[in-house]
Image (cartoon, rainbow over all chains, first blue to last red; front, top):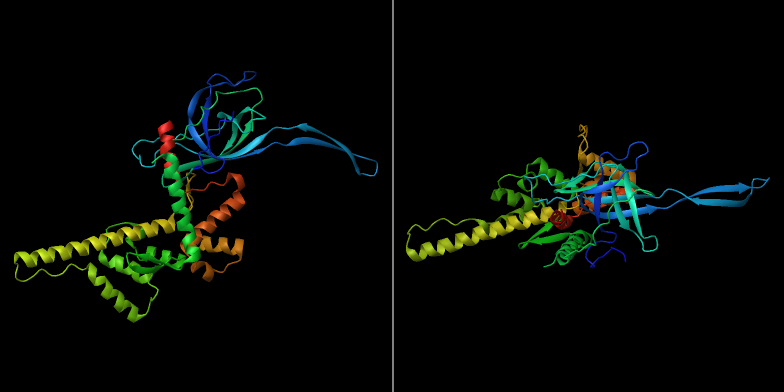
Length: 155
Length: 212
């Protein structure tokens, strides 16, 4: 079952995601990174996955195409996320910025099932009236995984 | 009201405020007809230090200056005289010379009506300005850059480059449309990584705060 619930109010592609911090002491040479501690819950308002194939083309003696082989390549995704923090609360900094290396788990479509993605690029937060957002690029993880986001319950 | 209902209502209100300048040239503010704020008006209000744009205490003269600048009859002298007459309803009348209970009661009622009318007018102007500025671009937390030219020049230059519009044309554009075109340019160039804001995002911010 998809963990995407939209009661018709939030714009298309808005997804709740729990983002995890890489565990300290993991991720060194030959040590796979693990994720246990949640940084915070975020709203992913746009996600554009890119699932390319590495294609090797074969040409004949005249340089005309006569065959090709394709192999699955690394998947990446551009995302924009809204950071938590009540704009009306100015006394306590509540905003939790996402850092490179953070990861999250999401089901983008039921055929592929749950996938883990980790941040390879993250921009500085942008702000308007206390609302803060960050854009970034994530790459699909093939061995690493992190806990799944709880099913969103938007009241 | 649930979060979804609140968000839906806020999003609908935003859309209405965005579409309004496309179909109407003027708007009613407590019985006063005003033009939509143009980029030129915005710059003028900031240069004269209008408290509706730069903050600070609001005098009746500020309210008059705001309405007069955006009056469809501006700068006609006859229109100004008529507007001044209309503004008399906000003036607190002189107290009666003979302070009899009934005349004092009448004076208090008239004074309260004038104050109430003016405060509603100020509130309506604040909302009108907020609606006009709601699509203004957000700021980045990157290290600040020095400013070498006016932000208005950068808007004119951007519109010239993107749409081929002249400075004169851009300055006469309604501010609500200017800010929406700025968003369109950001999205066109930024693609899926463009960071844009809606005032209704504040509802999501509150919800996220409750989730963390």
